[in-house]
Image 1 (cartoon, rainbow, N blue to C red):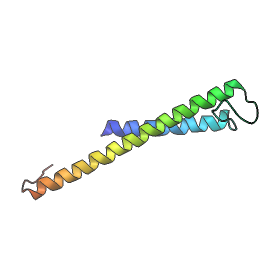
Image 2: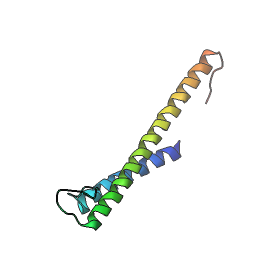
Image 3: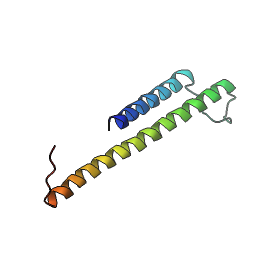
Image 4: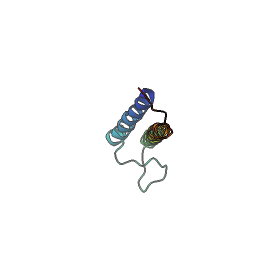
Length: 91
């Protein structure tokens, strides 16, 4: 469980850093090549990379959180099932 929490926090920090850098470095650039006004190619590429990093970190955080919740529910339900069947869980 500790490893899952580390992954969750690392991905949350990565997400925050990518979004913060995007707002700091390329605030008004959309990561798409076509826009109403011409944009510098380095800005478009930087915005694209930062958006990709942010979206990947967000998905990793969501998947890790879902796994943590699932593991906790499994643990709670498994203990309740063992207690109901007459075998007490001792720790």
